Image: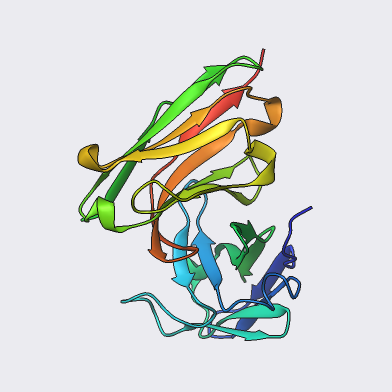
Length: 109
Length: 119
């Protein structure tokens, strides 16, 4: 059982928007603005998509955005594209350690 | 170009030891925190350990405390993970990752090295 809770799977059609949630507690997600999101394609290393809740690394598509409300963080992908199909992981800092969610498989229909 | 190249993985018996290395290039290694993250076969990501720029602050997931040691050699641009008393549940691909923004955003990852703990 992962420390942060994500839906196992989400799906959407090309051009649509989807949102992946990441639920923690007041000791992690709710207590710090240190939530990150990673994309991982099969057999590849993870890629940082969002850091500090809502910041995008330089050069990353604006189709990816992050937010947080209380103990739940969210990743929204707009204008879905076939190449967005991947596993997505949230992570959050908590005192002295980093937690990951169990991952969400995004299927582009 | 930032590159992180892990090595040292392999098959080890339960109770055994292994030392993973990560060779870094393309950035000023001594200026960044570094981390190890693992992924068991078919499973999700698990943070293992992090170390500060100088090697003085070290943090570990509870399940490896007392068994794993993270270290670095800034003169050699290298990160290490000394693993001992290995268990079957330590079987995973181990990734070396650069910390982009302290404390926990990881912007560059290696391709990983597989550690298999089995008799």
